[in-house]
Image 1: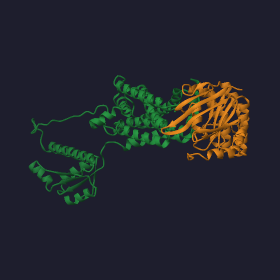
Image 2: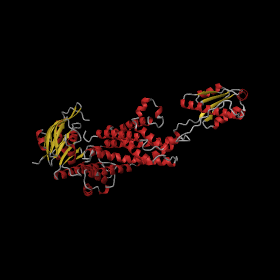
Image 3: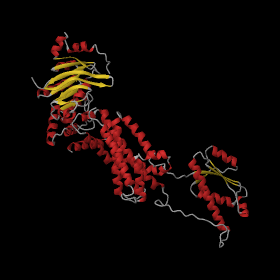
Image 4: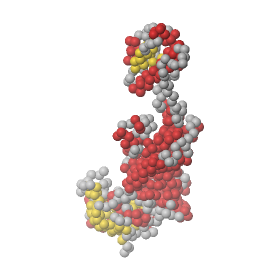
Length: 372
Length: 247
């Protein structure tokens, strides 16, 4: 026990003496949490639409206004012909073409019917699909407006209509930040815990101090705990900073218990530290440790559900994600923060992460040898 | 005659097909300064690492302070001091913090640590540098400090792996004064070196060539046996036949 205290005192002294790393630990989460959620979201905006208006009527103008007013579209240079518009698409200066035929307004009034033409630049598939869908919705709405203006309400509508009313549960305004911030916090805690712990022991290997430690009667578990606890504390500090930024910058108040979040973070950091330690027992230089840790963290983040929803991954990839601790933390963060889940809802997550923690740490302890 | 504190019998270490240490056998009595000479790559460090419980021998037998190197490496670690070739104190801790840390993990009491640190700092003349980071000290001072830290728990045996490499002659002399002082207290010193003048300071010297011990005697008897005027000539005579290239 006393030995452990000496180890901890030494580790904390070294951490506090390394001002650069300390600053990184404190500033990195704040910077990332301020930048990422605002930049990296799934909303498709700024779709450039090129409108070829052959009609130049009041009706076509009103349609164009309602398209620009939606906020999703930007108008490209107006072109007189479809061919000119195609050139814009080929130059990647436009994503969509909407062609309004000559006599659009007149025919709509007279024949009660009109055809519009949409061409989509499908290089960026998501943008193209969503853009076309948004445009469709806007045109349908425009159409519905016209109908209510022209057709006197009768007792029985000429066409029976099914109106769908949707309710967005848990995140009523579809605010992507509410979805992204908790996920990014999980990612930050992972980075700090896994990298710092992996590099720390390897640094001692490089400087030769680990040999001096190995030749003392120190116990393996004491040494490993002496390395785990400081980074455990640092991980929780980063987590706390994240929670504060989430609360005071984004105004997101966790629906569920903050204690539950901390409880999960404690277990989670334990398991990620195990990964860092494991890497450090195999790596001989800081470069090796950095690359190996980077490789795993990259995969963990990509397959963690932060950007790509796990449900939309192929079945084999979904199997991989079950062995990815980051996935569980991101899920728990979103469940507890957004949905207000309780311990009962996330107990399987607890089990999975504890299991991985035991395996990774156990492996690291076995693989760390005082006598080679 | 003193008790034997280090005894090896045909101790070997193989790394795959490479035989780093080839069946070495010797005894070291308590209180002796035992010099371990050899060219780079001769297997000195490997032999020393086996004896200090850092590396598991492949075959043979050895006891250090009565403990078996195969089964009791942790007991050995409790009774020995070790100073590696690479400087190995924490450069980002101060002089006193390093002493305190190593004292602490050897299980010294707080008062003993305090007493030891004050004594060490005074002996080494580091009073003015107590609060400096070890990384900022000149190499010679670092080495003397590392030696003193390796001795902090009053070990019976201390292993020194090229302790004076890269150090100026004056500091080397001071270093050897520290070694003599320790030997006078009854500590057994096991030291590797490249400097032949240092070999003359040892009570007995063994010369390793290609993993095996080629000669083992007092410096005076070695010079006589090989009809050489200096240890330098003895070493040259023996190491000339080495097959391994220095690494």
